[in-house]
View 1 (spheres, rainbow, N blue to C red):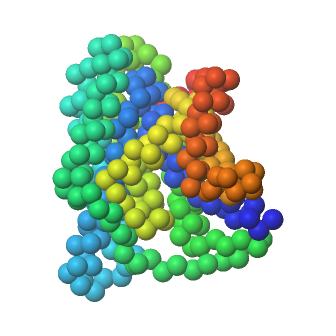
View 2: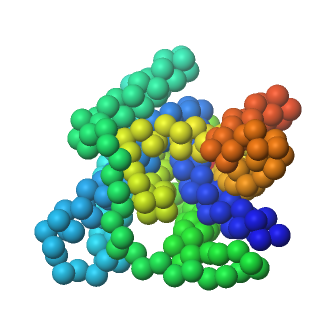
Length: 309
């Protein structure tokens, strides 16, 4: 029972992060029907930028509260990633908007590789540790342990997801995003600036990715120039699981994938008689992706196109 509760808690934390990253995939796909494979690298940049800023503060011995330093690192990561999201859309994708989808897909993969190599040149190949600035407190829940950092990650993710839903459903920007997703040409005739809406969609997704990147580095205590690849693939799997193009589906898919992966990691040793260990947890994400593509390609909420971003 303790293991089950603990894995559920871990899965919720992991799933919250996956959901934030998956939202970037699904929002862009909802408007452009483009799979932005560079989105995982934007998440990586968020983690690396925040650690660079935090490292600059700690190296200079600045007498600033640790939470304030992390908050400054987070804001810097958001600002850089928003600019990066804008540049990616403006430079790499906008010129190909009328091109065949294969061209845009290849460009997305190319952007992912470019960003990875750029990060490697800037920060090197070594892992970068997250300094112990956050005071960690543990609480016991049903025989399992949950930390204040885990509670913060889940709470902040839920608030961000709720805020995004309100933005899409209750604001003029959200209506413009939904109109653009339905028919770009008609939305343009109605006075909507399509280019601005698409740029804002990339920027909002990049901001969420930056926050997710900081969460990952703070939770695992590490960041690396290659971390965006696997994280991006899992978030993409979550978006497909929920129904790519559907905002609520990305949230549901992220949470479900986190729970599946965490429960799988907790019980895979028992199920296989010790033949496989918890380090095979990545297998579950791709197993889920295969199952979804085979049995329900539209995802769990894929038919609810009215909620697309």
